[in-house]
Length: 326
Image 1 (cartoon, rainbow, N blue to C red):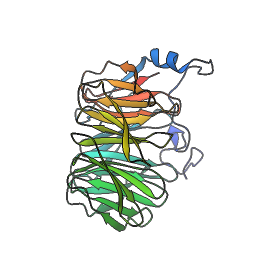
Image 2 (spheres, one colour; image 1 turned 135 degrees about the vertical axis):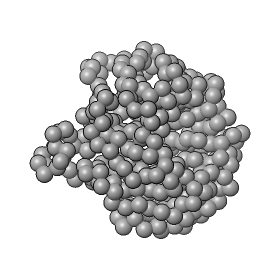
Image 3 (cartoon, helix red, strand yellow; image 1 turned 60 degrees about the horizontal axis):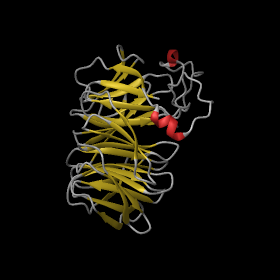
Image 4 (cartoon, helix red, strand yellow; image 1 turned 60 degrees about the vertical axis):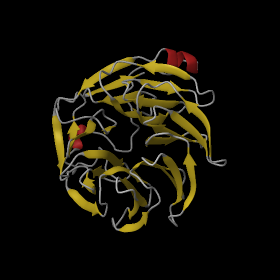
């Protein structure tokens, strides 16, 4: 693990540890406020403009010191906190990068692309350590746990790779259209969402599908899991659905967005945060299904959300801005 005391690191002047908590907060959050007060008073505290015509903010990572990693077409760029100076480029993909993962327990970063590959990078040197090749169409999402890299693709498959030697372990089939998203339920189970309008639960070790959840009327584009264990799915049908795993039923449908759902997150209060092509971010109570806050300000599609350890929400948009909400 690398840290700020490692003087051999070429990145040492930035002075941070990859394992330190993500935070941008500079305000005192110790004063008690009710959840309703918090959500009624969320405001955009900062706007960061990315000075890069190729960046659409399909994905981004905010480092503990405020430095930002973002896709720029087929390149990944590391920016200073103001996003006016590019400090490093990760060059190797031949088509647009869709998803980026930083492995905080090591010095590696992963990315997947429309070039059909997953690449492993040395975070500090930008050297490409490996290129994982087996998919026959765009690779849109990757997930990582302590043992595996999981990838899903427009070739309708999910692939499991060894995190240490990068070899392909298993190919999972069952969806009959693009696999758009996936997420770990636990160490044994994965949930995936597809353009075939279904969610599927998979046993990671056998590759068998244990359940198929049906209810959306258009592509399922994004997923998250509540702290209480329910699956949350977002769709191009403009709705968000909450699913009970045991009954395999939809227990609630959240309606309010006027366009396709692009990203879902859950905060420490177990509230659902959603973004949409309608240019808004919404915060929902999962128990009542009520929308308790609508955040506006972006002037183009909102494509990505991150919830920081500080509780702040960061949204990324095709308007080439990151907005920080508190």
